[in-house]
Length: 371
Image 1 (cartoon, one colour):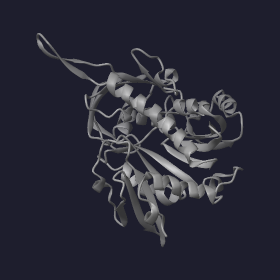
Image 2 (image 1 turned 45 degrees about the vertical axis):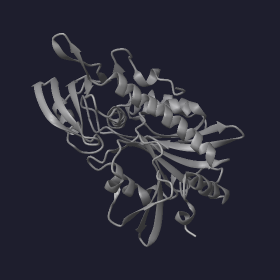
Image 3 (image 1 turned 90 degrees about the horizontal axis):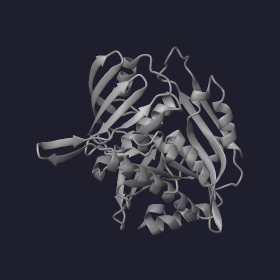
Image 4 (image 1 turned 45 degrees about the horizontal axis):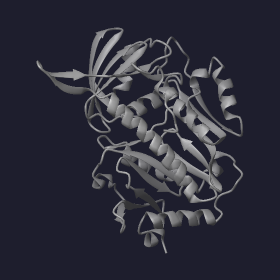
């Protein structure tokens, strides 16, 4: 009997995933990525702006309903093997996709759903500074780095950093690497591993910067769900804060309508040498930034951009100078654009990049992961 034949709701899905754990597919010892992540339960958190599910249909991908209106099964065949992914839309803003397969088998399918223009979907994006805070939710067991300085400034040489560290003391190792001048800017976290304690058990997880949670081992599938829910709730609070406090608002006065803005700023640790090249890359309508716009050059050191977020079709205005990018969200802009920008700029530019506001000199540093 295939899984889909016995999964009617999210409770059945939980039981099925618990069975996977019981079949001893998980080993306590960790190894190289090729074996440590193979066959593990993976959950992707997806940020949703309420798309039509029919828009997710792809060639050779079948979407099956279940008795639970919030649970769908995606079925496809690749190289003669059948695959099933499970989509849980119980939380309308943050969906979950469950997979039991190696990432290379399913990542292209998921990317095609999420990253198409106007998909109304996006990954959740964890900036390096936020991932580092999540390490403190449990006992750190490792981290990974991935960095390419796509925006070379001040004559910097091209740097390509990729590494994985397993073991205790990850934060100390990370701090030591950051003191290394040549590669310090390239120490943007692309993933963390931790033991997350729950009552009478634990979950050993790897969390990627684009919201993929890989369960390495656990006493119960519920431990995985508890950590997932905690981080989702924290991330949701950040998005709500951005959308509540930093969108442009219109209000009436005795002289008509006026606009009030409280912009957010991305602060660059080094001045950008070629601002025109930087602007053309960010607003090229390409991944990972997914921004297109009309670029207005005021001077070599100042640009205005009237942009469209290709994830949601939301309007966003930017002002860019060599040391700062000001972001003015429209009254209906999706706040996830901020997370996407900061995360990818830290990965392609400098891990020291900060998100600041008029009230906060470092938004992520001061934000509590316990909220």
